[in-house]
Length: 149
Image 1 (cartoon, rainbow, N blue to C red):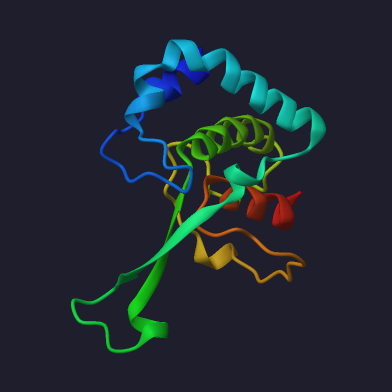
Image 2 (image 1 turned 90 degrees about the vertical axis):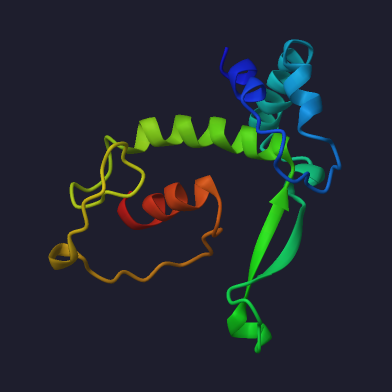
């Protein structure tokens, strides 16, 4: 089962998110947690509602250089999110991507598996109305939806 596989492959050395749940816990109890996480995910899709804890994050400024001199240009924000949120985002990404690949423009290569082609000659600018979440798995997919579908 996809959920069990995702829980079992959690890297326990990664930092915890705002839920303060150690990554070892869902990994060690993957069998017991799988049905509950599946219920939460499916209910979230049915109701178009994401629990607030899954949307929260801890933002840490990480220096780009060894000694930052300017806050705006020498630091980059790194968001720590709940492991469960990342796992659920992966499920959604997998499902959306399999649907979108068939509908994407042939010149669009982002998010396509085993593809790294860059074709600057065929690129064009397009005005997007709305925000794209950066640094998430879904950000690239939402960008594709807004530009090509």
